[in-house]
Image (cartoon, rainbow, N blue to C red; front, top):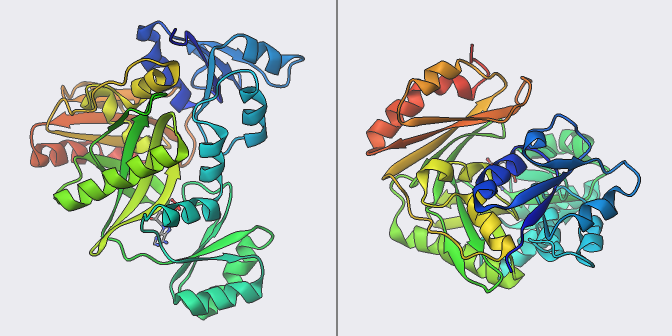
Length: 368
Ligand code: AMP
């Protein structure tokens, strides 16, 4: 029997979009989150973890549990899994929560990744910089996202400042990758091990925040497409993953280099809502509930996602454009906050670029 009620740890925009995709399949949602006005709040029951008996009530009211962030308590996930299935499992979660564990897994599976060293003292930082050569990207091993918890050591003169900024945390020093662009590959795996992979997205970041994703990644040769698919398929099978998994990649002259993975639906996959036969959200719901996976084929030859950052902007401008689709998350405006996104579909690369250009103001706080 497929699961009927999904419990989500968290109630942000990813949970909201999961519920928007799962509701037509007659799946219901319960969110475990303390924020009352969160993006998911109107799409299902919200249980506040601080209330008496909240966890038991949450577990008893759902058939399966999932999550929308890798920065959650893996012990909580393991506790829930003793009585209710949690997908992706705590194994996938723990592997994605720790950059050293994650990069060792990449290496073990033959997935190219930057050279790296563990750093727990200034002496180790100096020896890592000597071994890796500058520039070095220094990151906290846990809890980093959108470029937070990072420092770039461009020369040995930057070591003191980088250490000052990040000391007190376990760190990873990574060799700087001279990439031409950033890509991501998203796939879903069901409980029987069946897998579907979406076309690869090209992702433009600014100040660590994703601004635009384009699909298919322009001029990506077949060898690299296959490399990305092989990487993610190996990861899914190795982890015994159930649900959506995302792998972020650097495109380099000598092939694709893995940066990090996320055991969840991903911002660079939002284009799938109108751009693919089955969205990443629906495929995640299908995978964790025990339904068959849906087609990842594109509905149009080209698609893009433009993030709405900081200010909501003029929504009528988006609605006036027939090939554009507005998705707002019900969040209040705040500097650098992801408030929504615009999906665009087009029949050619040039048409797609024209549309993206029209919505440039939404990407960078300049919206009206
Ligand atoms: P992350 O939090 O690991 O996704 O890193 C945030 C951003 O920093 C990435 O999207 C890249 O633009 C950049 N970055 C991270 N690691 C490296 C690296 N080893 N070499 C070059 N750029 C990097």
